[in-house]
Length: 304
Image (cartoon, rainbow, N blue to C red; front, side, top):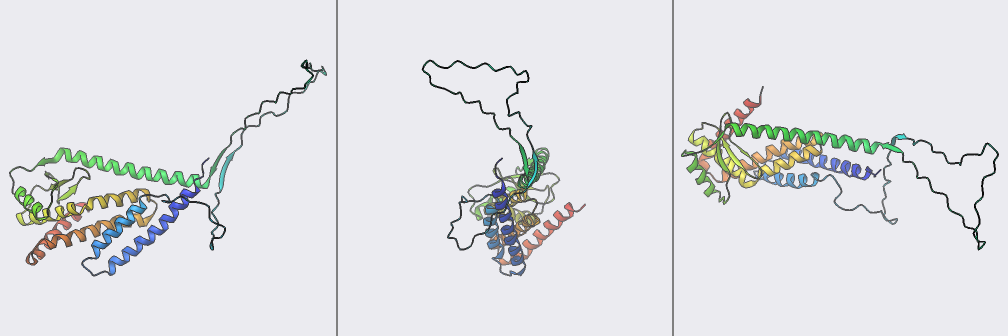
Protein backbone atom coordinates (compact mmCIF):
# COMPACT_ATOMS: atom_id res chain seq x y z
CA UNK A 1 0.00 0.00 0.00
CA UNK A 2 1.29 3.51 -0.76
CA UNK A 3 2.24 5.77 2.11
CA UNK A 4 -0.39 8.49 2.53
CA UNK A 5 1.10 9.93 5.70
CA UNK A 6 3.14 12.68 3.92
CA UNK A 7 -0.01 13.85 2.12
CA UNK A 8 -1.96 14.10 5.36
CA UNK A 9 0.95 15.82 7.08
CA UNK A 10 1.12 18.43 4.30
CA UNK A 11 -2.66 18.92 4.48
CA UNK A 12 -2.54 19.37 8.25
CA UNK A 13 0.33 21.86 8.00
CA UNK A 14 -1.52 23.81 5.31
CA UNK A 15 -4.70 23.78 7.38
CA UNK A 16 -2.98 25.19 10.45
CA UNK A 17 -1.13 27.87 8.50
CA UNK A 18 -4.18 28.81 6.46
CA UNK A 19 -6.38 29.01 9.55
CA UNK A 20 -3.91 31.35 11.22
CA UNK A 21 -3.80 33.57 8.11
CA UNK A 22 -7.62 33.68 7.90
CA UNK A 23 -7.84 34.61 11.57
CA UNK A 24 -5.27 37.39 11.14
CA UNK A 25 -7.08 38.81 8.08
CA UNK A 26 -10.37 38.66 9.96
CA UNK A 27 -8.94 40.63 12.87
CA UNK A 28 -7.24 43.11 10.52
CA UNK A 29 -10.51 43.75 8.69
CA UNK A 30 -12.18 44.73 11.95
CA UNK A 31 -9.50 47.19 12.97
CA UNK A 32 -8.66 48.70 9.56
CA UNK A 33 -10.20 52.09 8.85
CA UNK A 34 -8.34 52.84 5.62
CA UNK A 35 -10.41 53.05 2.45
CA UNK A 36 -7.81 50.91 0.72
CA UNK A 37 -7.99 48.12 3.32
CA UNK A 38 -10.50 45.96 1.42
CA UNK A 39 -8.48 46.16 -1.80
CA UNK A 40 -5.31 44.92 -0.15
CA UNK A 41 -7.22 42.22 1.71
CA UNK A 42 -8.59 40.96 -1.61
CA UNK A 43 -5.02 40.59 -2.84
CA UNK A 44 -4.16 38.71 0.35
CA UNK A 45 -7.21 36.45 -0.13
CA UNK A 46 -6.06 35.71 -3.67
CA UNK A 47 -2.57 34.65 -2.58
CA UNK A 48 -3.89 32.62 0.34
CA UNK A 49 -6.56 30.99 -1.81
CA UNK A 50 -4.05 29.98 -4.48
CA UNK A 51 -1.89 28.29 -1.84
CA UNK A 52 -4.75 26.51 -0.09
CA UNK A 53 -6.22 25.37 -3.40
CA UNK A 54 -3.31 22.91 -3.78
CA UNK A 55 -3.35 20.72 -0.64
CA UNK A 56 -0.01 19.09 -1.42
CA UNK A 57 3.61 20.13 -0.86
CA UNK A 58 4.85 22.36 -3.69
CA UNK A 59 8.45 21.20 -3.34
CA UNK A 60 9.73 17.61 -3.12
CA UNK A 61 10.27 16.42 0.41
CA UNK A 62 13.82 15.07 0.61
CA UNK A 63 15.69 13.46 3.46
CA UNK A 64 16.90 15.85 6.13
CA UNK A 65 20.63 16.33 6.45
CA UNK A 66 22.25 14.92 9.58
CA UNK A 67 23.87 18.34 10.14
CA UNK A 68 20.50 20.12 10.34
CA UNK A 69 20.40 21.97 13.67
CA UNK A 70 16.73 21.18 14.30
CA UNK A 71 15.29 17.82 13.35
CA UNK A 72 11.70 16.94 14.12
CA UNK A 73 10.74 13.26 14.35
CA UNK A 74 8.45 12.15 11.56
CA UNK A 75 5.00 11.04 12.75
CA UNK A 76 4.35 7.33 12.57
CA UNK A 77 1.26 5.78 11.08
CA UNK A 78 -0.97 3.54 13.20
CA UNK A 79 -2.12 0.20 11.85
CA UNK A 80 -5.83 -0.26 12.47
CA UNK A 81 -6.67 -3.53 10.75
CA UNK A 82 -4.69 -6.41 9.28
CA UNK A 83 -6.12 -9.42 7.48
CA UNK A 84 -3.77 -12.37 7.60
CA UNK A 85 -3.50 -14.42 4.38
CA UNK A 86 -4.44 -18.11 4.43
CA UNK A 87 -1.56 -20.39 5.36
CA UNK A 88 -0.20 -22.32 2.42
CA UNK A 89 1.48 -25.77 2.83
CA UNK A 90 5.25 -25.42 2.80
CA UNK A 91 6.48 -29.05 3.39
CA UNK A 92 6.22 -31.81 0.77
CA UNK A 93 3.69 -34.56 1.43
CA UNK A 94 5.11 -37.45 3.45
CA UNK A 95 5.23 -41.02 2.23
CA UNK A 96 3.09 -43.09 4.58
CA UNK A 97 3.50 -46.39 2.70
CA UNK A 98 7.27 -46.62 3.31
CA UNK A 99 7.75 -47.07 -0.43
CA UNK A 100 11.11 -45.77 -1.60
CA UNK A 101 10.84 -42.90 -3.97
CA UNK A 102 12.18 -43.44 -7.47
CA UNK A 103 15.52 -41.87 -8.19
CA UNK A 104 16.25 -39.88 -11.28
CA UNK A 105 18.96 -41.20 -13.57
CA UNK A 106 22.26 -39.42 -13.45
CA UNK A 107 23.78 -37.74 -16.45
CA UNK A 108 26.40 -39.66 -18.42
CA UNK A 109 29.18 -37.21 -17.70
CA UNK A 110 28.89 -37.77 -13.98
CA UNK A 111 28.03 -34.20 -13.10
CA UNK A 112 25.28 -33.69 -10.56
CA UNK A 113 22.63 -31.13 -11.55
CA UNK A 114 19.98 -30.07 -9.16
CA UNK A 115 16.78 -28.32 -10.28
CA UNK A 116 15.73 -25.57 -7.87
CA UNK A 117 12.32 -25.99 -6.38
CA UNK A 118 9.71 -23.52 -7.64
CA UNK A 119 9.22 -20.61 -5.28
CA UNK A 120 5.78 -20.20 -3.76
CA UNK A 121 4.50 -16.65 -4.28
CA UNK A 122 4.07 -14.80 -1.05
CA UNK A 123 0.44 -14.31 -0.15
CA UNK A 124 -0.60 -10.68 0.03
CA UNK A 125 -2.21 -9.44 3.21
CA UNK A 126 -4.64 -6.53 3.52
CA UNK A 127 -3.84 -3.70 5.94
CA UNK A 128 -5.74 -0.57 6.87
CA UNK A 129 -3.97 2.27 8.65
CA UNK A 130 -5.18 5.42 10.34
CA UNK A 131 -3.72 7.57 7.54
CA UNK A 132 -5.67 5.64 4.93
CA UNK A 133 -8.93 6.04 6.88
CA UNK A 134 -8.42 9.79 7.33
CA UNK A 135 -7.57 10.22 3.66
CA UNK A 136 -10.71 8.36 2.59
CA UNK A 137 -12.86 10.48 4.92
CA UNK A 138 -11.32 13.68 3.55
CA UNK A 139 -11.83 12.63 -0.07
CA UNK A 140 -15.41 11.52 0.61
CA UNK A 141 -16.26 14.86 2.23
CA UNK A 142 -14.68 16.81 -0.63
CA UNK A 143 -16.59 14.70 -3.16
CA UNK A 144 -19.89 15.38 -1.37
CA UNK A 145 -19.16 19.12 -1.28
CA UNK A 146 -18.24 19.14 -4.97
CA UNK A 147 -21.36 17.24 -5.99
CA UNK A 148 -23.52 19.57 -3.91
CA UNK A 149 -21.95 22.64 -5.53
CA UNK A 150 -22.42 21.20 -9.02
CA UNK A 151 -26.04 20.32 -8.28
CA UNK A 152 -26.80 23.86 -7.07
CA UNK A 153 -25.10 25.30 -10.14
CA UNK A 154 -27.06 23.07 -12.51
CA UNK A 155 -30.30 23.98 -10.75
CA UNK A 156 -29.46 27.69 -11.15
CA UNK A 157 -28.72 27.17 -14.86
CA UNK A 158 -32.05 25.42 -15.29
CA UNK A 159 -33.75 28.39 -13.64
CA UNK A 160 -31.98 30.82 -15.97
CA UNK A 161 -32.95 28.89 -19.10
CA UNK A 162 -36.57 29.25 -18.12
CA UNK A 163 -36.77 32.85 -16.94
CA UNK A 164 -33.98 34.79 -18.69
CA UNK A 165 -34.71 36.90 -21.77
CA UNK A 166 -32.52 39.44 -23.60
CA UNK A 167 -32.74 43.21 -23.22
CA UNK A 168 -34.03 44.86 -26.40
CA UNK A 169 -34.67 48.56 -27.07
CA UNK A 170 -34.60 49.41 -23.40
CA UNK A 171 -33.18 52.30 -21.41
CA UNK A 172 -30.71 49.88 -19.81
CA UNK A 173 -28.78 49.48 -23.06
CA UNK A 174 -27.50 53.08 -23.44
CA UNK A 175 -26.67 53.25 -19.70
CA UNK A 176 -24.84 49.93 -19.98
CA UNK A 177 -22.81 51.13 -22.98
CA UNK A 178 -22.04 54.48 -21.36
CA UNK A 179 -20.73 52.86 -18.18
CA UNK A 180 -18.73 50.32 -20.18
CA UNK A 181 -17.00 53.14 -22.02
CA UNK A 182 -16.41 54.98 -18.76
CA UNK A 183 -14.76 51.90 -17.23
CA UNK A 184 -12.75 51.27 -20.43
CA UNK A 185 -14.15 47.76 -20.89
CA UNK A 186 -13.13 46.26 -24.22
CA UNK A 187 -14.91 43.01 -23.40
CA UNK A 188 -18.30 43.25 -21.70
CA UNK A 189 -20.76 40.74 -20.26
CA UNK A 190 -24.08 39.96 -21.87
CA UNK A 191 -27.02 41.98 -20.56
CA UNK A 192 -30.16 39.98 -19.77
CA UNK A 193 -33.38 40.34 -17.80
CA UNK A 194 -34.39 37.63 -15.34
CA UNK A 195 -37.94 37.22 -14.11
CA UNK A 196 -38.22 36.88 -10.35
CA UNK A 197 -34.73 38.21 -9.64
CA UNK A 198 -34.64 40.61 -6.69
CA UNK A 199 -31.24 42.21 -7.21
CA UNK A 200 -28.81 42.62 -10.15
CA UNK A 201 -26.07 40.02 -10.27
CA UNK A 202 -23.14 38.89 -12.38
CA UNK A 203 -23.08 35.18 -13.20
CA UNK A 204 -20.77 32.95 -15.20
CA UNK A 205 -17.00 32.42 -15.21
CA UNK A 206 -16.31 31.87 -18.91
CA UNK A 207 -19.41 33.51 -20.39
CA UNK A 208 -20.31 36.20 -17.83
CA UNK A 209 -23.85 37.55 -17.92
CA UNK A 210 -25.20 40.59 -16.11
CA UNK A 211 -28.70 39.75 -14.89
CA UNK A 212 -31.20 42.51 -14.10
CA UNK A 213 -34.58 42.40 -12.34
CA UNK A 214 -37.68 43.20 -14.31
CA UNK A 215 -38.16 46.73 -12.95
CA UNK A 216 -35.66 49.26 -11.63
CA UNK A 217 -35.72 53.04 -11.58
CA UNK A 218 -33.24 54.85 -13.81
CA UNK A 219 -31.03 55.96 -10.90
CA UNK A 220 -31.07 52.53 -9.26
CA UNK A 221 -30.42 50.93 -12.65
CA UNK A 222 -27.41 53.16 -13.32
CA UNK A 223 -25.82 52.58 -9.92
CA UNK A 224 -26.53 48.84 -10.02
CA UNK A 225 -24.98 48.52 -13.48
CA UNK A 226 -21.95 50.50 -12.32
CA UNK A 227 -21.56 48.18 -9.33
CA UNK A 228 -21.81 44.95 -11.37
CA UNK A 229 -19.58 46.20 -14.18
CA UNK A 230 -16.98 47.14 -11.58
CA UNK A 231 -17.16 43.57 -10.29
CA UNK A 232 -16.64 42.40 -13.87
CA UNK A 233 -13.61 44.64 -14.37
CA UNK A 234 -12.07 43.51 -11.07
CA UNK A 235 -12.75 39.82 -11.88
CA UNK A 236 -14.18 39.32 -8.41
CA UNK A 237 -16.20 36.31 -9.55
CA UNK A 238 -12.94 34.39 -10.02
CA UNK A 239 -11.84 35.20 -6.49
CA UNK A 240 -15.20 34.02 -5.14
CA UNK A 241 -14.91 30.81 -7.15
CA UNK A 242 -11.41 30.25 -5.74
CA UNK A 243 -12.71 30.70 -2.19
CA UNK A 244 -15.49 28.21 -2.95
CA UNK A 245 -12.95 25.66 -4.20
CA UNK A 246 -10.88 26.13 -1.04
CA UNK A 247 -14.02 25.53 0.99
CA UNK A 248 -14.66 22.29 -0.91
CA UNK A 249 -11.16 20.97 -0.22
CA UNK A 250 -11.04 22.18 3.41
CA UNK A 251 -14.65 21.33 4.29
CA UNK A 252 -13.58 20.09 7.72
CA UNK A 253 -12.03 23.46 8.67
CA UNK A 254 -14.48 26.06 10.05
CA UNK A 255 -12.04 28.83 9.06
CA UNK A 256 -12.50 27.84 5.40
CA UNK A 257 -16.23 28.52 5.74
CA UNK A 258 -15.40 31.84 7.37
CA UNK A 259 -13.07 32.64 4.48
CA UNK A 260 -15.95 32.42 1.98
CA UNK A 261 -17.94 35.01 3.94
CA UNK A 262 -14.96 37.32 4.38
CA UNK A 263 -14.07 37.16 0.68
CA UNK A 264 -17.68 38.00 -0.19
CA UNK A 265 -17.64 40.99 2.15
CA UNK A 266 -14.24 42.34 1.11
CA UNK A 267 -14.97 42.05 -2.61
CA UNK A 268 -18.15 44.07 -2.10
CA UNK A 269 -16.31 46.73 -0.10
CA UNK A 270 -13.49 46.96 -2.65
CA UNK A 271 -16.00 47.10 -5.50
CA UNK A 272 -17.91 49.94 -3.83
CA UNK A 273 -14.66 51.84 -3.30
CA UNK A 274 -13.75 51.52 -6.99
CA UNK A 275 -17.27 52.42 -8.11
CA UNK A 276 -17.31 55.58 -6.00
CA UNK A 277 -14.18 56.73 -7.80
CA UNK A 278 -16.21 56.86 -11.00
CA UNK A 279 -18.90 59.12 -9.49
CA UNK A 280 -18.80 62.75 -8.39
CA UNK A 281 -18.89 63.28 -4.65
CA UNK A 282 -22.44 64.61 -4.84
CA UNK A 283 -23.69 61.17 -5.97
CA UNK A 284 -21.92 59.12 -3.31
CA UNK A 285 -24.88 59.23 -0.92
CA UNK A 286 -27.34 58.18 -3.62
CA UNK A 287 -25.08 55.32 -4.67
CA UNK A 288 -24.73 54.14 -1.07
CA UNK A 289 -28.49 54.30 -0.55
CA UNK A 290 -29.09 52.24 -3.69
CA UNK A 291 -26.59 49.57 -2.67
CA UNK A 292 -28.06 49.38 0.84
CA UNK A 293 -31.58 48.95 -0.54
CA UNK A 294 -30.37 46.20 -2.86
CA UNK A 295 -28.63 44.43 0.02
CA UNK A 296 -31.80 44.73 2.14
CA UNK A 297 -33.84 43.15 -0.65
CA UNK A 298 -31.34 40.32 -0.97
CA UNK A 299 -31.38 39.67 2.80
CA UNK A 300 -35.18 39.69 2.77
CA UNK A 301 -35.14 37.10 0.00
CA UNK A 302 -32.76 34.81 1.90
CA UNK A 303 -34.72 35.06 5.15
CA UNK A 304 -37.28 32.24 5.36
